[in-house]
Amino acid sequence: RVIGDSLDRWKLLFGQINLHVSKINLIPLSLRRRDGGRFKVGLYPLLEQLFGAGSQDHGQEDRRFATFTNGTSALGNSFRDAFDSLKALCPYAEAGATLCGGGSSSPRQQQGPKAAARHHEEIEDTRAIDLAKRHQDLAINDRRKVAYKQRLTITTGVLTSVPTKASQTPQHLFTGTAALVMGAIDPTILNARGSSIGNTHLLVDLHGDALGAALLPGDRWRTSHDAFKDQVFLDAKFLGVTVRKEVYGMFTRFFNIEGRENFNSLNQNEKRTQNIVPDIVTNRHPVDSVIHANGPQMWEVKRIQSAQKFSATTGLPTGLNEFYRERNRGRFQRGADRRANKCPAEYRAKAIKADRTFGAPGSTAVREALQVLPPVKGIVLGAFGEFSESVNILIEGLAHEGALKNPDKFGQSNYKAAFGQIHWWLKRRWARLAVITAVESRYAALGYSGGTAQQQAAAAHTQAQAQDDWREDGAYRQRAGEAAAPWGYAGG
Image 1 (cartoon, rainbow, N blue to C red):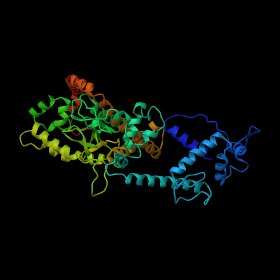
Image 2 (image 1 turned 30 degrees about the horizontal axis):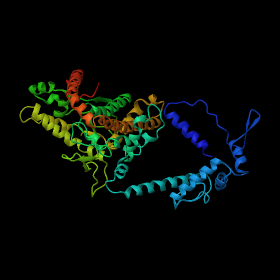
Image 3 (image 1 turned 180 degrees about the vertical axis):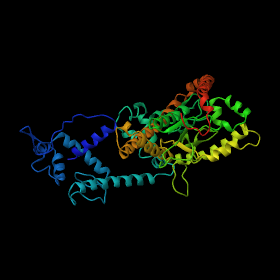
Image 4 (image 1 turned 120 degrees about the vertical axis):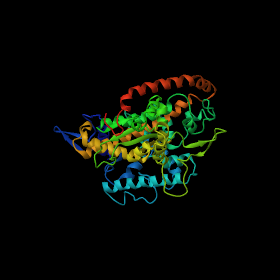
């Protein structure tokens, strides 16, 4: 009797991914249906031939269940055996058509669709409470417990989304994604456990944290970082937001002449470490937006590559790091939020360094300019694929602005419908990207594990460094015009 409701859900789901179902033919559910003067037998009458007259009426659930498992069909026998096995593992469950935890009301006590819906809601609530208790009873540093407390509801959507090109998890990453999100063991990483990683002192650990933390040649850290940064930039641009990325010239006007020449001679990496170069800068938001600010709003993308810290001598994990170690007092805060809170202080430190390196002796011009601007906000992706609360705020702000400016891009004509669709669109795609790029980065490091891989890493190191410098210089030349722009400019 839930087929009709399920059909509505699937129509909605297919509509969200822009697939149009022109015609769906279903067996009619009613007793008889007139169609061009002829009668069609519905689904329920067909089932009554198997379960008996009146068996499909409301309140006959136990009768249908008993008839189905009475030994007259192979399918019913298999289902009964499986059901008995489940009952043996779950002794507190009720017998009959629906399993539910103790304390839930029975559908026989209350009648009607609303009572049935309330009953299923109670079952889900009971399951959620039981799941939380099971994780709470685990040891404080148990990986499953840490992952459970850190992950977001939307993060697990990468495992349950309808497999379309835009939403599916690539098949070769699916197992690793599930292991990362759930705090489980990834067989791909387990096979390499104990192997040396490149020329580092680290060894592959049970959950692959060392693979994330290892400093290796190549672009895997930058690739995973830039994949998210570029997606935020492109989505914001698509929604009509005034946005720029990698704003190298935002504070150069506060350097002296000699300092500006020295800064322009640096490569990309050196510019980022010796001056403030925001990953994203947005501006001119609607006054009622949650991300509205008095001036350019800087956003800094950060990734937490590992949930553990490692011994400098043995290369073995020594426990959860500062972002994931549980505090004895205060409210719970996710590791990604702890990392995001560090970004303003890091920008202040960069401003001091820029004044000392590129300014006149005793200059505080960059620090003063930074203080005038809205504080930087960190966009942090955690070691379990989770992200900081600032990302939710950014999503809300972009969805609001997109719904005001471009609702037609999402097939909507009113603000409320457009906001809801854009909000879900951003949250789903960003959550998916955060998880799969974390797994991709670890799998890329597996290529450097073991003896042969160490030799490959050593041989490729110089070449990779040279290629990095070439790409950095080329990218800098492309941004020469941007570097000369006033620090308060937010267009283009």
